[in-house]
Image (cartoon, rainbow, N blue to C red):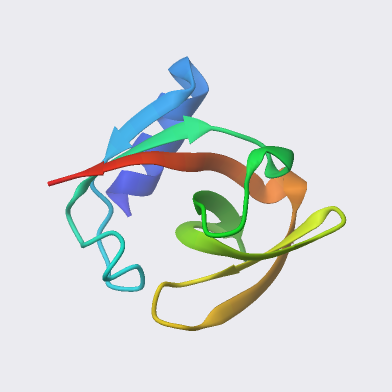
Length: 100
Protein backbone atom coordinates (compact mmCIF):
# COMPACT_ATOMS: atom_id res chain seq x y z
CA UNK A 1 0.00 0.00 0.00
CA UNK A 2 1.76 3.11 -1.23
CA UNK A 3 -0.46 5.47 0.73
CA UNK A 4 0.56 3.83 4.02
CA UNK A 5 4.28 4.36 3.38
CA UNK A 6 3.61 7.93 2.32
CA UNK A 7 1.48 8.63 5.41
CA UNK A 8 4.13 7.24 7.74
CA UNK A 9 6.86 9.24 6.00
CA UNK A 10 4.92 12.52 6.12
CA UNK A 11 3.83 12.03 9.75
CA UNK A 12 7.39 11.36 10.84
CA UNK A 13 8.73 14.36 8.90
CA UNK A 14 6.22 17.04 9.92
CA UNK A 15 3.40 15.56 12.02
CA UNK A 16 0.79 15.85 9.26
CA UNK A 17 0.08 13.64 6.25
CA UNK A 18 -2.18 14.16 3.24
CA UNK A 19 -2.85 10.87 1.44
CA UNK A 20 -5.47 9.14 -0.70
CA UNK A 21 -6.20 5.78 0.98
CA UNK A 22 -7.56 2.95 -1.15
CA UNK A 23 -10.13 0.40 0.01
CA UNK A 24 -13.75 -0.01 0.99
CA UNK A 25 -13.79 -0.69 4.73
CA UNK A 26 -14.50 2.96 5.57
CA UNK A 27 -17.12 3.42 2.84
CA UNK A 28 -19.72 5.99 3.85
CA UNK A 29 -17.20 7.90 5.96
CA UNK A 30 -14.07 7.90 3.79
CA UNK A 31 -14.41 6.81 0.18
CA UNK A 32 -11.55 5.10 -1.62
CA UNK A 33 -9.27 7.74 -3.14
CA UNK A 34 -10.51 10.73 -1.16
CA UNK A 35 -7.88 13.12 0.15
CA UNK A 36 -7.43 12.47 3.88
CA UNK A 37 -5.44 14.66 6.26
CA UNK A 38 -3.99 12.80 9.25
CA UNK A 39 -2.40 14.56 12.23
CA UNK A 40 0.08 12.69 14.41
CA UNK A 41 -1.69 11.71 17.64
CA UNK A 42 -1.40 9.21 20.45
CA UNK A 43 -4.10 6.99 21.88
CA UNK A 44 -4.80 9.37 24.75
CA UNK A 45 -5.86 12.03 22.22
CA UNK A 46 -8.63 10.10 20.46
CA UNK A 47 -12.35 9.89 21.18
CA UNK A 48 -15.17 7.52 20.28
CA UNK A 49 -16.02 7.83 16.60
CA UNK A 50 -12.67 9.28 15.53
CA UNK A 51 -11.06 7.86 12.40
CA UNK A 52 -7.51 6.85 13.25
CA UNK A 53 -4.37 5.59 11.52
CA UNK A 54 -3.09 2.65 13.56
CA UNK A 55 -0.66 -0.27 13.67
CA UNK A 56 -2.65 -3.48 13.28
CA UNK A 57 -1.21 -7.00 12.99
CA UNK A 58 2.13 -6.05 11.41
CA UNK A 59 0.45 -3.54 9.10
CA UNK A 60 -1.20 -0.11 9.23
CA UNK A 61 -4.87 0.69 8.67
CA UNK A 62 -7.33 3.55 8.81
CA UNK A 63 -10.28 2.62 11.06
CA UNK A 64 -12.74 4.00 13.62
CA UNK A 65 -12.50 4.17 17.39
CA UNK A 66 -15.42 2.01 18.57
CA UNK A 67 -14.53 1.74 22.23
CA UNK A 68 -12.06 3.06 24.80
CA UNK A 69 -11.21 1.17 27.96
CA UNK A 70 -8.36 2.21 30.27
CA UNK A 71 -5.27 2.22 28.00
CA UNK A 72 -6.69 0.38 25.00
CA UNK A 73 -8.91 1.18 22.03
CA UNK A 74 -11.38 -0.97 20.11
CA UNK A 75 -11.05 -0.35 16.38
CA UNK A 76 -13.36 -1.31 13.54
CA UNK A 77 -14.47 -0.36 10.08
CA UNK A 78 -17.40 1.81 9.02
CA UNK A 79 -19.40 -1.23 7.88
CA UNK A 80 -20.18 -2.51 11.38
CA UNK A 81 -17.19 -4.80 12.01
CA UNK A 82 -15.06 -4.53 15.13
CA UNK A 83 -11.50 -5.71 14.48
CA UNK A 84 -10.15 -5.85 18.01
CA UNK A 85 -8.31 -4.01 20.74
CA UNK A 86 -5.05 -2.09 20.38
CA UNK A 87 -2.88 -0.27 22.90
CA UNK A 88 -2.59 3.50 22.97
CA UNK A 89 0.92 3.14 21.55
CA UNK A 90 -0.48 1.63 18.34
CA UNK A 91 -2.25 4.87 17.41
CA UNK A 92 -0.13 6.77 14.89
CA UNK A 93 -2.51 9.56 13.91
CA UNK A 94 -6.02 10.94 13.80
CA UNK A 95 -7.99 11.98 10.70
CA UNK A 96 -8.68 15.72 10.84
CA UNK A 97 -10.09 16.29 7.33
CA UNK A 98 -11.57 14.36 4.39
CA UNK A 99 -11.88 16.03 0.97
CA UNK A 100 -12.78 14.95 -2.57
